[in-house]
Length: 465
Ligand code: PLP
Image 1 (tube, rainbow, N blue to C red):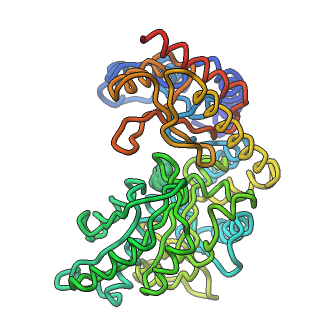
Image 2: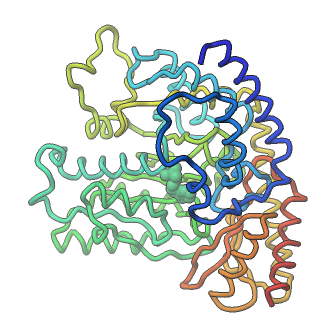
Image 3: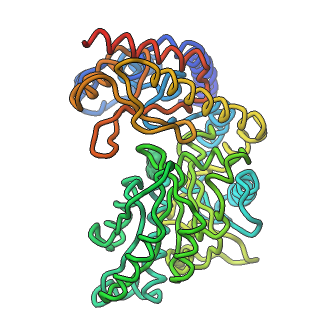
């Protein structure tokens, strides 16, 4: 393909993209295909000779598009959204076109320097203290793994990487029972082991970790000869939005000299609204590490996860490696690949810059406040509807409910709703029962979309009866 053809196709794709987004609401939210249907339509072997872009694009529309679930659909109420605002998509197009690999300052100085400034813009937007630095990662899972590795290294006097973990006792990490599975996986991968991830009971309206139970578990572990290494807190758990009271938990961690990491993957975005700070953010300045995903609620196209660090030194002592071929000369510069596990890095800061400048914080806050209000409104309507019960109250824009019947009936209702295609939601579990999760967070969602969800849920529930 020559660059004139590239420009022609680029214009065509931009037109296609605008039409796609203007009419996305007419499509089923969740793909309505059966497993294997898409793969069966694709040539089983690669072509020996090149094909025309016209033919490739026609197959994209015919084969690929029917197999896509539409994450940018305004009635996407499943999981959490992966919002991609138009300005962030445009920035990604530029990034794709420049196609730089931004592992070191010198491999793209602008990418590194913009990243530093964007992390600081977001630090200010979220009300985090001056002096906190950070890095953009691909996912919250990677940031959490980085923090867990740091806990491990710090607790072993930075000897784990060199010597392995043999003879170092059972390293223990503490969290509530409501954390995301990425915490479990980080402990597996870091060699801590599932059995050494101590999950503590929760209490109160926000299902917070009990700090007394934390202190007791640490004391018992020390008495048993184990090695407490860190505490992982959550603001906005995935299942029901569980949120720890940061201050008392961080106090226990500080008394015990434990490294702390806060997973605020989706709910962190809401902290651009100062009115949520009292309930969710009090004490946050004392977290050693915090992760939140601008690719979820904020609108930065996937992937974009920001990890803030109170002091970057422990993580650098854990992850930095500098073979000859990566050494740089000249003035002291930041090489962000030393802060993370992958060496290669995409230029993720550009989409944050475009997004934040294009909308401004006040417009982003307006959307979040609307989402929270509409989630509360829908929850109240379901609460008033015979046959429905609210399983967990709204925490920010997430709540869960049950329709008529047992656990199997809940799954039948979820499946029937998603087969219908007008809305998309997913199930979860709470207090040993299957629940139906509902989150409002898609960037283009309107109040009408949320109220339509109520009609669809009721209509399909009645049909199933
Ligand atoms: N933590 C929480 C609370 C989440 O809700 C999620 C995903 O929804 C994750 C972590 C994992 O995020 P990622 O896909 O960026 O690894």
